[in-house]
Image (cartoon, rainbow, N blue to C red; front, side, top):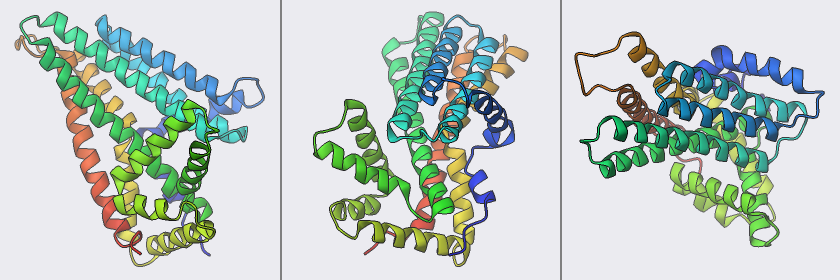
Amino acid sequence: MERLPSKSLSRLLDPLNRLYRHRIAKKIAMALRDTPITANQVTLAHTCVGVSAASMVFFKQYVLAVLLLELRTILDCTDGILARLKDSATPLGRTLDTIGDGVTFNALMIAGALRIILDFPGYRPSLILIAVFFFAMIAAHCGSVYMLMKRKLGSIILEQIDTVEREWREQAAKVYGETSSWISRFGYWLDTFTIRFVSEEWYEKIKKRRKAEDWEARALSDATTMNELARKTRKTEFDHAVRFTAFVSDDNIFAVMSLSFLLTEAFPLTIFPHVHPVLIAFSAGFAYAILSLILGLHYLHVFYHGVYRD
C-alpha cells in the first residue's frame, strides 16, 4: 500500500520543535549515540532542568527561567531521538518522559502560585491554588493527548499499523497478568484514560478485541482505512488533524508562557500595579491550552468519525 508522504510526519512536531529544536536535539543525540548515556538519563536531566527553571520563576529570574525551559524542551526532544538511534524506545521510557514533563509543569505551577501568593498577600491563597491546579490539569491533558496522537498518527504514516493499540494491548496483558511494575501500570492507566478522553468509541472497540485472536489483523485494517482516508477522500480533514495535533503539544504552552515572561521583562507595565509577570504568563498559557485542546479534539473527531464504528 502506498504510504503517506513523509512531510506529514514532520508536521506532527509542534511548530518551534519543527523549526529549530528538533534539529539541535538531533545533533545532541548523534553526539551521545556512541556513549553510555541512555535516553532515560536524558529524561532525568531535562526533568532536573525543568525544576531548576521553576525555581527561577519563584526567585523572579524570569529570563533565566525562559532559557532553562528552552534547554529543557530541547533535551525533551533529544531523549526520544536518542532512544530511536540506540533502538531502545520502550513504553517504560515514554512513561518516564511523561512523568518528567508532569514534574516540570507541576513544579512551575507551584513556584508560580507561591510567587503570586507572596507578592499579593491580599489575594486568597486557596483561590490561587485552585486556579493553578485547574490550569495544570488542562495542560496535562494537552500533553497526554498530543503524545498519544503523535504516536498514533506517526505509526500509521510510517508503518500502517497503530502502535498505540499494540502497546496498550501489551501493557494490558502485563497488568492483568500481574507481572508489571508500578510505572508500567501507570503508563497503562494513562494511555487508557487518554484514549477514553479522545474517543470513547475507540476505547470500547480496542477493549472488546483485547483478547481476540485476530486483533492484529483488525488493528491493521483500521490503520489501512485511516491511511486510505488520509490520502484520498478525507485528505483535508487529515491535514487539519495533523496540524492541530501539533498545536496541542504542551511544549507550545511553555513557549507561550516563555514569550509572556520575555515581554513583561522587556516592557514592564509598572503603571498597572496588579499586572504581574507570572499572572500574565499563566493567563496566556491557560488561554492557549484551552483553545488548542478544543480545536485539536474537534479536528481529530472530524477525521476519525466512523473509523471506530462497528
